[in-house]
Image 1 (cartoon, rainbow, N blue to C red):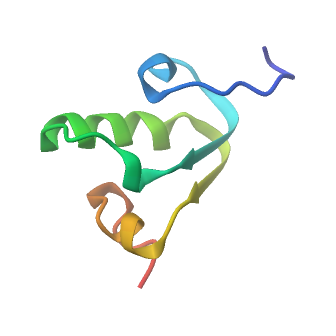
Image 2 (tube, one colour):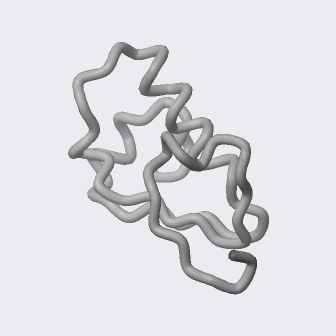
Length: 72
């Protein structure tokens, strides 16, 4: 899997790292409690070894506490 593109959910990425991680559709996240939402975002953004790309609207990114400071 080292040289392959892997598309998966944050549920299955825990414990795995990839050179590049792309996080999309923050605005479509479920209605989880805040602790669950933050834990899943932390897993998503800490799996990137070299490059992390967040793709969504500025409004959706601003709503994520773990992404504070990325946009003004």
